[in-house]
Image 1 (tube, rainbow, N blue to C red):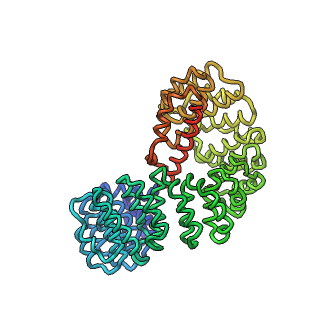
Image 2: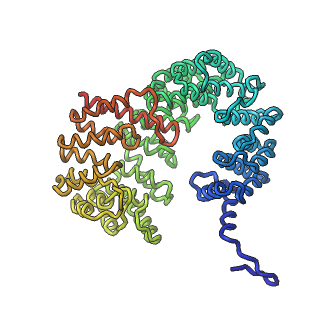
Image 3: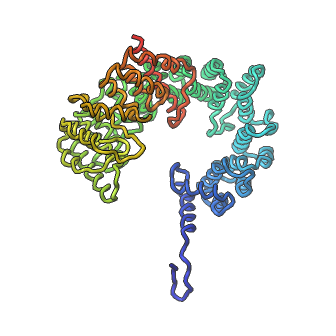
Length: 619
C-alpha cells in the first residue's frame, strides 16, 4: 500500500524493516534500550550481531553525535556492550569513540573511552592516555587498557609512573592478581601508599578500587592479608579516602569468605560509632549486607536506629530491614512505622516475615496497608499485598472483599485476552485466598468458575477451594485429571501435603506421589520429598537419600531438601558427609542469585540451614 498526497506521486509505505529500525531508534533516544529484557534492546543486539557494519550500527554511531547528552551516552554505552562480542577492530565504533573523547559531558567521555578500547582501538587509546587533559577520562582509558591487557600479550603502557595516583593504584591492583608470592610485599606497600595519595578529584566514582583489590586478593587466596589490610584502612592508616576503600575491601571480603563477618564486624561497628554521617552510612550498609554481620552487630545497629530515623530515613530502613530479617524484635516499631508512612519500600515483605518469626508482627497495623494496596489498582503493589495477606493467613479476613474484587478484575482481563494459562497475578490471588482459609468463603463461587490451570503450581485452584471449604474432593479431582503438560512435572506437593493433614493418602494417591517425586529432578522432587517421608517413613529413606544430597548447595531447593533430611533424623545420617562438605567450605558457594550481595545472603541462608540439619542428624 502507498500513501498519496494530492498532486503528488504515490509514496511507498515504510517496510517492516524500516518500521523496526525506527522503533529501535526511538528506544535509543528515550533510553529504554538500556533496560535488560526490553524488546528493542534485543532487536538491536540481534541486528548488530547479524550485520556488524549494517544500518543499525551506522544508526548507533550516528547517534553518538546527537545534540542531547543522554542520547550520546546511551549510544556510546550500547556500542560498548556490543563490542564485547563484536569484530576487532570495529572501525565505525572506533571512529565514533575517538570523536567523543572530548565530549562536553563527562559520562559520555568515559563511555567513549571504554568503547574505544573494547572496539579494538587500543593504540589510539594509548595515545589519548598520554595527551588527554581530563583526569577522569585518562583514568577510564587506563582502566579499560588494563582490563584489555588481561587477554592480550604485553603491558598496556608505562602506567607505573603515571602522575595520577588512581592510575598507579589500578596498576598495582591489576599486578596483584597474578604476581608471584615474592613480589607481594612490595606491591602491598605500594598499593596502600597509592590509596593514601589518592585525592577525591582523582577518584572516579564508577571505579570501586577496594572491590577490585579484594578480587585480586581472593584470586590469590590471601584471606588473612585481606582482613588485616581492611582493618588498617578502616582504622585510618590511609586517610579518609582509605577508609572508603577499606569499606569496599571489607565488603568484598564478606562476599567471598565465610569467616569475614566474624573477623571484620568489630572494625565495621567501630567505624559506625565514630565516623561522620556519610562514612557511618557506608559502614552500616556494609554490615547490613550480610546476615551474619547483622547478627554480630545487632546491638550497635539497633542503637543507631533512633539517630537515623529522621536524619537519614534510607539508612534507618536499611537497619530495620536487616534486623527484621534476622528475627530481631527491636526492628518491629520501625518496620510498622515505615509501612504506615506510605508505599511499602523494597524488602517490606521479607521484613514483615521476619517480624512474624519473632512474634512481633501486628496485623492491626498491617491490614490497613494491605487494603490500601489492593484498592489502589496498582499492579506493582499486588505482589506485596498478596504476599502479606497470605502470610497473615486467617488474620487477613478483612482483606477478603478486596482480594475477591481484584481476582474478579484479573479474571475478566485474562478472559478478554483469551489466555489459556493462569498468570502470576491470578495465581497469587487464588493462592492467597486459600491461605486465608475458611474466612475466605465468599470467594468460593468465583473460584469454582475459574478454569485456567497453572504451569508452575498444579491444582492451585483446587488447593485453595479445599483449604477454604475443608473438603478433599477438590484436590482429589485435580490429582485424577490428566496433565496438560508434556515432559514437565509441575509442583503439586502442596496438594499431597494437605491430604496428609486431612485424612491421609489413598493407595492410588501414594503411588502417584512416589511416581511424581522420583520421575525427574526439580521442584516436585524436592518439595514432595517430605510428603513421601511422611507417607512411607523409613522404607523410603534409601530412595530419598539417593536424590536429596544433590540439592544441598542449591540456594533455591537446598533449604527444602535439608528440612526433609532433618525430619528423617537418624535415618538421614548417611547425608552427613555431604552436609559437612558444605559446612567446611572457606569460600562462599558459586551461586547466581542476582548480585554479589544476594549470592552472599543465599550462601548464609544455606549455611544456617545446613548447621541446623547437621545438628538434628547428629542428635
